[in-house]
Image (tube, rainbow, N blue to C red; front, side):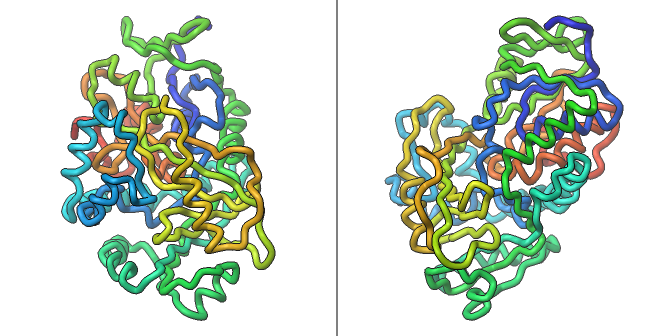
Length: 415
């Protein structure tokens, strides 16, 4: 596939990549999207479907030190370590531990607020154009606490949310039963985040955005980019079967971005947070109305087209490591204590990889040492939420404009 140079080439067809491609297209640029088309491998395929206003908190935080012994012994369902594979992400681990303090958490929350406060509107802008608004409902997300102590330990999160104007409502007792009659397990407290949107089929939403891109004249090269390099004022992407040239390029390949950036001389402390999900048929009784996060079980439950989606905690392992169903098996056992659930819908769990930075902030902006190259990766658990707003930022940068808000916390030069 060797043709004349397009205006912009986007590497990666997950929610961040397609959002960047659509945004560039809306701004009048000719765009080629390079993506192998393997929908189930995308991190944006498997998640709890939340477009979350309240996701201001990185994975690293002050609570890490309190739980560290359990983490190290793989006794906590929220995190599982594949020790044989950890040396290769040693720089990420060191920076991650350094960020486990309240000052770093507050800085991250202030930065992420710039994305999450705009996330729902950015999604709806695309969903309306794609005819996909039926996949998104704004019923909120419910975080559940099994004990009063666990609720009080999260007080700093609610304080920070108030500082940034993120709405929430504390619910308990009969109020919880009225809000979610499906709950079997007793919970001490619940916190409802009413501005969170819920996507009933993230994979279908992404496909609707891809269809919109093609209908508007965008081209998709169904290939994995093996090399991206600057040549004579252009960017050349090489893949099996050919190459493509563009005046500007965007790396938005999630966990696969690392290989391309390393070849260009960048050494980002980027790790892969692997996660699993499994759909179960709803059991007898009232349906689940919205995504819920059981903070005591370290998993989320979300009503989806395919059934009730159960998501696992984080597994630190390379992209190529074989599956380990320990966490998702534990999550399903816990979920059955929370909801009436039937048999699994699939034969095996889904496994995906979320690109993670140690400070919990994505990398968004122009490459420090390469003109015309832009980064849009590292969104961790909130890529589905913040893909479209990231796309708007990249679209402006491709035209040489400033972003609509300060993106300095997300720039690559911080590393």
